[in-house]
Length: 95
Image (cartoon, rainbow, N blue to C red; front, side, top):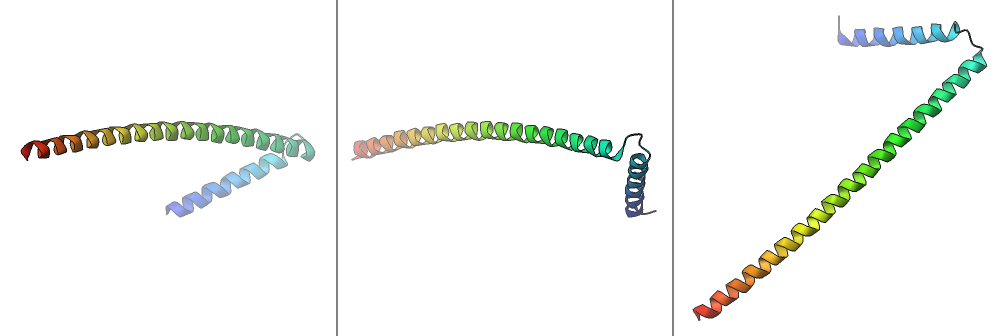
C-alpha cells in the first residue's frame, strides 16, 4: 500500500468523522457555528501573539548582532591603525 493511499485514506476518514460529528452534535447549527467562530478567534489571537513574540525575539537578535558587528568593526579599525603606525615607525627607523 503506497503512502499516498494511506494519507488520502486518513484525510478522508478525518473529514468524514468531522462531518458526522457536526451533523450529530447536540447543539443547533447556529450554536455550532458560534463555537467554530470562537475557536477560530482564539486560534487567531494565539497565532498573532506567537508571531509578535517571534518578531520581538528577532528584533533583539538583530540588535545584538548589530552591536557585535559594530564592536568588531571598531576592533579591526583599531588593530589596523596600530599596525599601520608600527609599520610607518619601522620604515622610518629603517631609513
